[in-house]
Image (cartoon, rainbow, N blue to C red):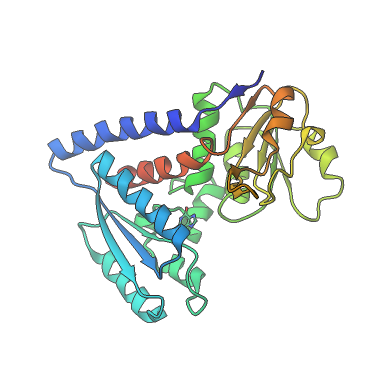
Length: 278
Ligand code: GUN
């Protein structure tokens, strides 16, 4: 029986720790404010943004909601970000992605001041991570490290294999595992003999974007498996990139979907907001 890494429980612990810290800040006269910008009415984005606002409320962070129409011009969005960059009472700025096609996402991300980049997407934040300097770390990868640490899973010296090389998950989690002294291999769509590589992993992080792709043939007995995927199957049930029922009996620890990596993203966003306060 594998140890089930309970992301819901760990994320609640983190949120409670942050709530205490925010209360201390309040006593010292410091308020924390996160500006959340949503463009258009994508239903998934509306759910994510709603959850972020709820987490802010729980922790005691003030949230400013900007709901812009799908037709907003790129310049109008950039102007809003620049005005928020200048405001001393705004600590963090988050632009929910994806954005409509007529808006250049990279340009939007680059316009957010790195001091307020609580998503950790700005090239300066990513650059800082890659050379071991201080900066915001993107939330899902930071959450994965917390899941491992708070489950007492050693990273140093371990064979860590990451499947996926996205800017939001694959690349930053690889850098974080390296920072924790893991031996890191990154796999992607052009990797030859994926199974041969993933079977070497002591810690396997799966961010491949294909439902139930990873079966027991891909994992070494006793490995730790972190599933970043989230999909709805034909019965409208949530599932990950890992075939949980197939893999769970052969591994030592595994994250479920839902209730694994998912809840950690918002907890780490809150962590970044609290740490945005100097
Ligand atoms: N869209 C999906 N995930 C995220 C996220 O973590 N941050 C932002 N800004 N947009 C997203």
